[in-house]
Length: 339
Image (cartoon, rainbow, N blue to C red; front, top):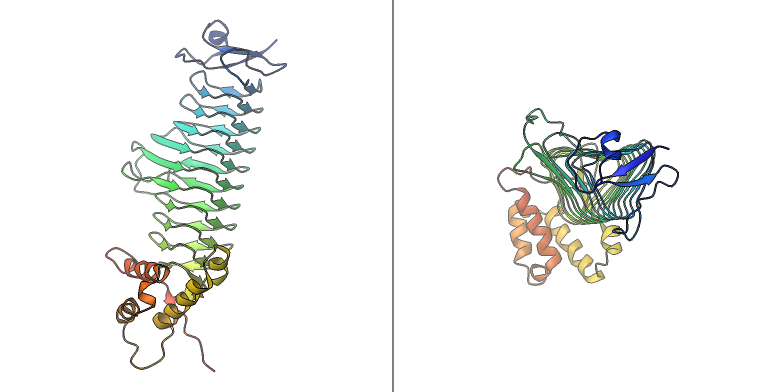
């Protein structure tokens, strides 16, 4: 009869013979793959072909399928499920009720750490928390990835750790990251975003909350994407996208407000009306006395009605921030042909 084993605070060598003779391991038969111990209220199931290092920390009710591997510094929370051929390596922590589909890889053995929150799903052959693709990265440097809760990360997605020890790649909560997306080193992703298939974010990109990208969107490094914005399919975004707006194009241009997204997110008709008025005053003025963008922003800020609307002020601040030092400015304005 073959046996598998689960760590219970031991530092002995990772070998089957040592484990079989060590009293501080929990053993379970390959026929049932069930931990036999009264200290766990819900047994863990580990397939006999899985390679689980004895120093790994495994929670209650964990299921580890055939040909999986769990490294020595890994921590798996309660209720995690590893489907066949998935792998957890290096200093990696999975929160409760995370699911790794077949072929998923989380973490690597380079210095640093990958922390995944609770209730996350990581799709088939996704690669999460490996070293960055950055020539400035040095293999002796620590690098980090932090992922929040309730994210759905679909098949073939790659998310990389930071490029230096003083930074983090961060993913917030409740994001849907569809198949074959890439989130590069040092990106900061907020909450409740939707990235359609093949969305590619270069290094140091910041995405706020409730952003929606259509398929095959590419974002240049160091760009900022404001909350409630929409990026059209196939867009190449090389400058910041202000809050609430929609951009599209091979070199993305402003195409108006994200009216569908604002409505779906519960903005009132009055808020949307005020935002439309502000947008027109900022970007659609055709009179000779329109002035510079800075002058138009100041004019909207001083408007007796618009200047006191929180949503309008948030959009204005987003635009101002994009022209701060070391920022890239905002996407160009699309000029429509009146004819």
